[in-house]
Length: 401
Image (cartoon, rainbow, N blue to C red; front, side, top):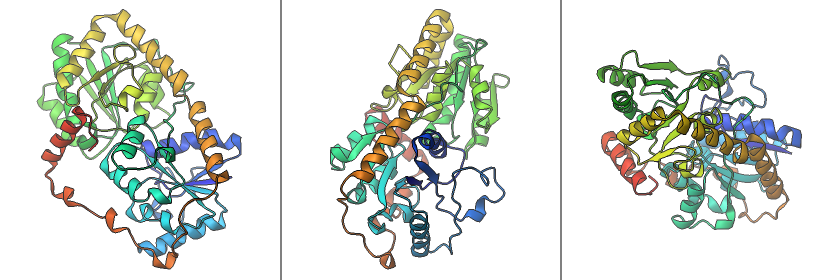
């Protein structure tokens, strides 16, 4: 069986998940392949150019109908049994399900709880054989708010390689780390300097390492410096995947103050490495990973003082920190291993391919156009500062943005 995952090769969670799932499915006879939705020439001089399992396509031009035709031709020529789409990532790909031939089964994978994922998933729900949600909250919102049948949605969390990511003896609670995209809108990274400054009032030896790249990297550095934390923070930039396990083994605390998430690979890897997580309390998402007060701490979104105080409690008691880091590690090995994730994907793909096809008859590709509901909305006019405040408020009260 061959299954296509429409995803752009990049350093980030969606591509990381592809690599993990592919590794688990190959021994089970499933060839899970990344098919980028952009022209393959764009990757010719990148680190991804020779990645195994990636089908680079030369698209004729940037006209959506021609790109859709080229992608479908590739899927048919390659005899793919199914395709997995990331709703909302590319409007033309999100518009494709009604035009897919019936012999190619169609699934959606929801990576986080943003409206930019919910809305396109719901618009195309009738044309998906199955919808994969990476956390319970995503399924519950899709069913309760958008009216998608509950039997159509399945939860498959991300997994972590617990043999690559494991605790190091040199770690301690004073050494904290953030790993992720340096983007304030989702990750709320501008809280990190405040958390560090407050934590150092409790324990002056506290140090925060930041691993990642993104549009707000320069502004984040400036905020650390303005907060007077020079010498107490380290900005590593983007850490190569092969080097990340060693970086995490030197740290004992993990901080992720996100406004919205799905199933954070960075959190899974940190917990497997023995880092005690301090996460935003996102019902059905972060509490799916962390048992409050046992394997980590969950704080209200935007509560930087609370995160600093939780970090301080870990630094106050080495015994508490050691118990919680073991609990974090145990949670990963028991419920979030790559093997567990791979078994779930294999079962889902087999079930979908074998089940009767209840999707509506496909529309002719000659009629392809981007669905009008997938274009820009009035939300683009909301000022960034207001948008961040609204997302923080929504997260605190259990709403998805």
